[in-house]
Image 1 (tube, rainbow, N blue to C red):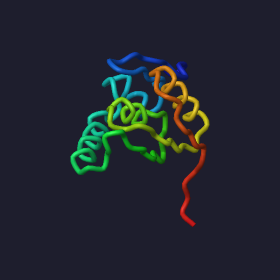
Image 2: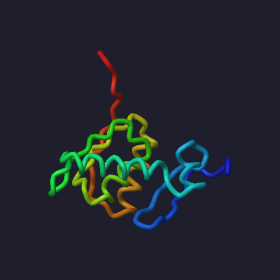
Image 3: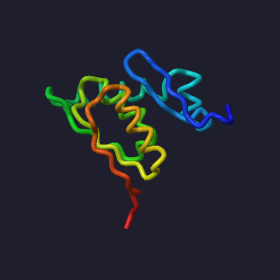
Image 4: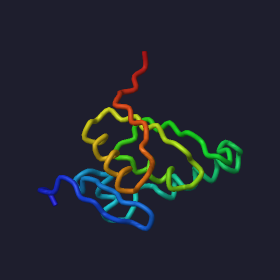
Length: 117
């Protein structure tokens, strides 16, 4: 797949566009997700602790990459909004595509690097 720059696959409750030549993309292609179980476990933990109110919470995802966790958080039904921060414009393009294909509400996307002073 060296010549494939990106591809899109449909899963049970979402679509995901990714590069099969990158680590996360290979994981999605081979296993069908990238750490979805961990995202679901995090949402369940935060919910049990009372950090996710009934109307949903806002999640700040720093280093959103292609938006796998962004999509998983939104699909959980417990998160109302995700603010995705990602410095790489190629990844931002894939986040936008993944959010649109999965028919999620438009999300605030921030192209920025997080640096310590």
